[in-house]
Image (cartoon, rainbow, N blue to C red; front, side):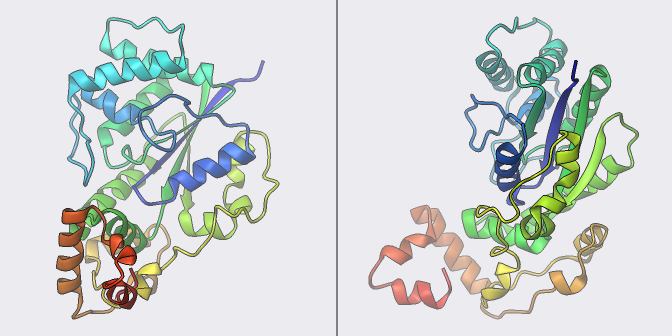
Length: 305
């Protein structure tokens, strides 16, 4: 009988995990949860587990995490029972967390896929994942660390949600220091690093290890939903003058990024552009509404919005 397998994608937000999940679901026999209140098949399972078990967590940028313990417990119960209707909810929190995950793996077998870009920057969540790996030797685990150029990640979050670049940089650094630490941790799970840039430029080759884990291979060479148009897009915005700190550059170099790929020019427009863009976003929900405003369209076009 084939063993159940579980693939867990760990990443920072805006790092391509949704595109990766979409590709894998289409090309490999992987299944994600069907019922969840979050978008893109996300569960936030392990940060909710950390809340239930009262493990330490950092406040995430533009996120509801960490979630209050009582709410997290209720949401875990709902998530598990909606996706595994015959699951008997145990009274013990530790059993709820670990037996619940085993039930999800078994019910979505033989290949269960999970991605929540909230787990990597919470070491307590990673510890719980590793604990679950040890408790379930009958399940094979593959942990995929998905990393993207920090400048692209920071710009994407600013462009989409006007997230504070300095705060996102700190969170990126925390997340990928955790990934480096995970690589050095003795675990029964396989750990592999996947760079966003390689995933979108040559997906079949970059994801070959995941396909091999699932005993299959990709047929598509250039899926339309994976493209490299978002690589280095921040260089096209003359007003975007954010620059990385040396400690962030040092972490990124360990994943193969060069200083040339991360170096940004100084822009005298950046303080004013940041203030205006962030202020408008807070008032209207999105600065992109300029595109629909006839009088302001020339301004939006000039700034490349």
